[in-house]
Length: 288
Image (cartoon, rainbow, N blue to C red):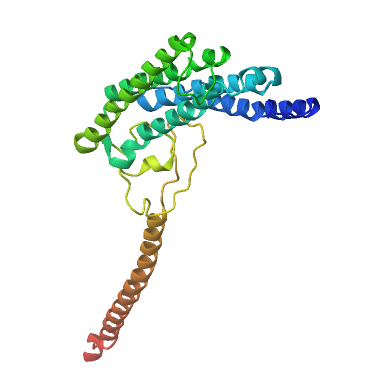
């Protein structure tokens, strides 16, 4: 858009609106950082991928603000700088978040724990490979290398070789991931309901969860940030206990009334018969 034949005032308009995108983007980054701020972080494979994706999204946001500037964008228009920026967002932040979700939910989905060593190896290879591929594209774009070309000038050889090595490394990184997932799914350690000590009702059910999840709809009483607090997450289910007490009370009243009536009738009959016999008993004085 900036490199087209648009008038200057329109370029300014597009520059301002494009830079405005940085406002919600910055809010998202601060929200993600605030989510983990002060938390009890454990650098598991899922957390490492999440933090790695946050870093790559932050870096792509910085280069995005640079591309929003009209003079800079005209200089790097249709160069490898744009390719590097775009793939830091898509292949960096999105793919890293995708792997973070897989490692986080794998125990709940399969009922098995993955191998943490292979997961961390997968993260290191992926993080290094992604940065080796797309970071060199930024200096290549600044030097003027155009995108969508099958060959390039010899002056761009060094950074392209680095990017090619990163591509091979990223390809190799999928091997420990597949090995980890397949082996853990078949013979991994059994996963409990909540292996991460996480907040959320999905971690209250067994792993993998049953089809109906809960017999009764749970009522959440914990706050959203109740990590590490010794407080219940949901209300205890008292429906069965209440019914039991009510049924017990009803049965007790009914049984008590029946027993009382029966006992009253028996006692009344017995006492009446005894009194009648005593009243009709002959008097010894009358006999004399």
